[in-house]
Image (cartoon, rainbow, N blue to C red):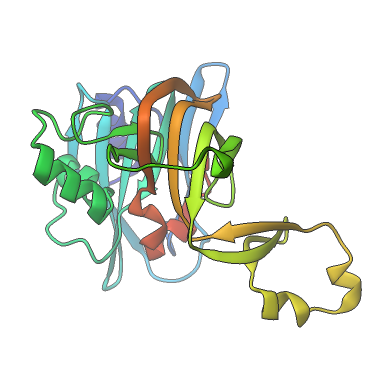
Length: 259
């Protein structure tokens, strides 16, 4: 697929795509930028390595989503491009997901197992909608009802940030965390360091700005969830908070865009 053909396929979902004018060598990096006409996708190639093939394997004009396949030698990577509420987004599909040959399968592959379990149990009419009987979604975060959960008021956190380590945090009006591992976070180490890793740093580096946080805890939220790029949602009761599976994809390293 050449650049013009790619532009036509993206235009079907109402999107613009700009491909760097250089040989398609090596895995492209993908970003979302904006100009006077609005947002557009950008694919940039390093210009070295194997020649890469791009193929739009499925497109949903009504939902403004498409699935792009990138072939880099024997390596195949898939990316879901789409429009979510107010902005365009792109997410890498985990390589472990099998049979992802269309937009619907890609959206399901981005649902964590607990969300898919909730869908099987609740059997919503449209399991891919942002709000249904099984879950409510805001961006990359899923909120699954936990009606039996009881939380001591003393353990409830207020206006707690929810972040995957980069990008603008979502804000939970009421939150509860349990389990997990205490880590030390800084701009240089957004995923955090364990206590032993932190103590192993030179003293000068340890004296810099750090924040103590909990990683991989079970997170529950209630009431309003806010983010500048998404409409506010209101959870009437406690909901389990789960992030989509894009971070499991090796190809996610090629996605620059973060909301």
